[in-house]
Length: 153
Image (tube, rainbow, N blue to C red):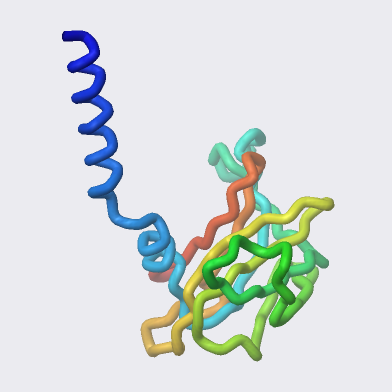
């Protein structure tokens, strides 16, 4: 009886896993942008910012190498040649002007470590966020994410 319960549990878990939407579709939906530009920064959640009362401190990262790779069926990015490379400015700002719409990896080289973010680049529209409203952040846990600011403060 115990084996039967264990087997039933395994079958249910496998069934649930197979019914989940593919993770890549979720990433593509969340990380779809109209232009590849913005501010690159580090989020330190271990240090409270005294003046703002928040639990995180965000610091722009200057002179960071950012590379764009085509995203296909291969994992990023050992055997791939970068399509474009830029450095972030003193305020963490960067812009890639020559990258055409498609599926890509954005790789940031920070202190000898690579941070990788997959994204979809679409043609810009009137509703596409401006470069000043896009933030690309890494945190002290190694996560790399895209933040889009909406509205005016």
